[in-house]
Length: 496
Ligand SMILES: Cc1cc2nc3c(=O)[nH]c(=O)nc-3n(C[C@H](O)[C@H](O)[C@H](O)COP(=O)(O)OP(=O)(O)OC[C@H]3O[C@@H](n4cnc5c(N)ncnc54)[C@H](O)[C@@H]3O)c2cc1C
Image 1 (tube, rainbow, N blue to C red):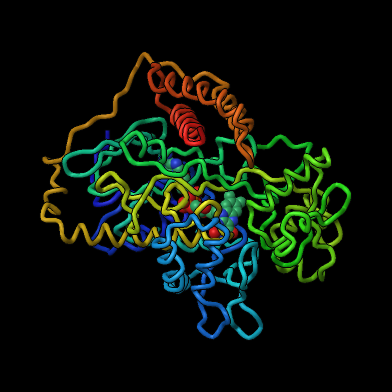
Image 2: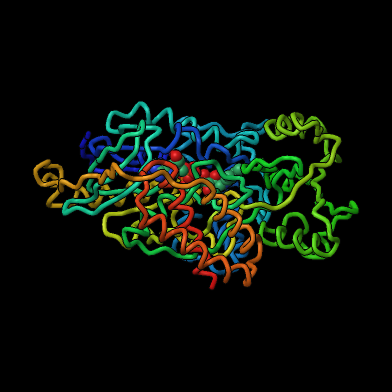
């Protein structure tokens, strides 16, 4: 068994984990792990971009960004963390640009900002329609050059224990178990999309970090605040779990939403904002309209716009649709809501610290409260940046101040916790994860169905307890099944 120690271990190599690592000074050692290869995460999939008020000569202000976020969030946002988000956005955008991130510019060389639902100004920094891939690629390149950061892909966190000097993390790699120790731990493990049958999320989104933090005693908050994106590509013939997203910015740039009869139905639900209403409003409208017409046939239509503009602005979406024999410059795009994003998670304060001393969380697995009941488009990459940096700054401050700083790195003083291997264990039975997904899809898709929630909670509780107490081999399937069961349990319990 390899046993190494770091000042900080970061679980997750999406935007939150990568940026937190980059914000640590060079004399602080960090281990950065990711469950699959470094590119498999929700951050890579992000299309639209990052919301931020940047140029002082624009007619935009942080107050307007703050107000748009509040309005989208149903005024349930945490005012302190939201203010931090909108006022510090500028410096993090500047910093990632200095780290090599490229954003689209207009003919005069000014950053082009796109518009998305719920924003009253064009303030979304983007790189074509593959903004997440651009940001993660550049941050990854930087991380791999840093001598103080050790990167271990395909390394899954499966357990975390407190020690008298920090934490001991058990991981799985190449079918074997390893333990690493650290003084501080940052959970940046992303979302929970795989608890649903249909989601825009990457396959890593099984809620592992939330589950592990919960098992360690961290407070979990608002985990039932889930965002269902209104415009996932909808191909009835496909059974794939991962749905391709038709970015919010397609509506931002003028696409119409049409029902089965080709009508722009949003005027019956939000006549002021129409297609540019926030996601929860549009998803609710689609489900209500589907019930009214007994039809799940909905389309996005941007074919009235200049074909050249469409092709330039949405090259990745256009490429995907052409592979499905749909030409978005001429054809309507079939869409339907699906699971997209988690607003709640591991509760943190304004610095990113959880209720467990020394444990930090940032990005989609964390609940900072900035989103309230519904996230404003393109505020989540921003949240991952601002609070990823905040975790790094607070840990640096604590390490600098800590009397026991050197002592914490003394191997003699580290706990000798060892990962428990059970040689007589059995593999997790097939079908458990499918069962959990069926329960969740029935109990809570866009609106909770209280009858199904009441039926589903005892079922997922039973699966969770069976996984916790049964004698199972601790492998990736086991860790993910236990995480999905725990997340489903926490969501349904919160709704009831
Ligand atoms: C299709 C799509 C489009 C989106 N578009 C936008 C957009 O335009 N703008 C915007 O602001 N937001 C957008 N979002 C949301 C945004 O991308 C995510 O909220 C954000 O990227 C989350 O970043 P993260 O670093 O927290 O998590 P992720 O990027 O998902 O990274 C999670 C990391 O944790 C690792 N991990 C998970 N479990 C373990 C484990 N047990 N052990 C070790 N590692 C683990 C994974 O391997 C991965 O490296 C979009 C999301 C999707 C799915």
